[in-house]
Image (cartoon, rainbow, N blue to C red):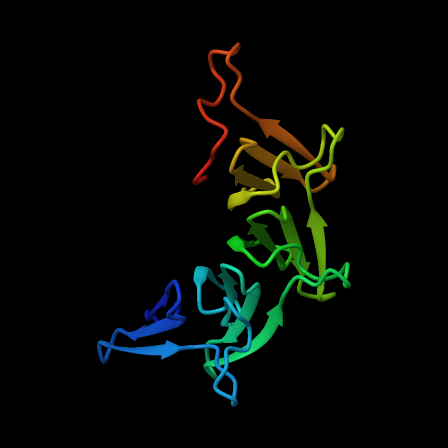
Length: 193
């Protein structure tokens, strides 16, 4: 983090904090006053992102998206998928998180496509694969996100290759494996960008 400490996400053991001065760990489990997990799956941490306000965005495997105040060491908000709420996150399995210069948080999911969260309006917008849309997302399993200097959002997917979202045009371009093209991708499974 900005104070040169280390935050570690574990699979089932919650969030761990390593104080580089004392060389000691502190673990933060999301347990309520009743001793039960507040958000099942929230202790299976897949990704951690620290924003400029010392708020940690924690992507989990099944527990949705959780925010954590690094100063007070308290869990703040829980974002989970709700079939009855079109404004909820699209999937509770979060794979990647990035923030652009417009204070928009971009969130990749395993099965729910790409989300963006506007911190000013506190609203989610979902981008999912739809049939017969050549300018839409090619795969709902988003593995990784990269934001470039031109304000484009690059995505690595499980089977749809690389997708690039152009914000100004509000459409995606796709770069995929093509056996007939020598200089295409060699695989449509993208693990890192």
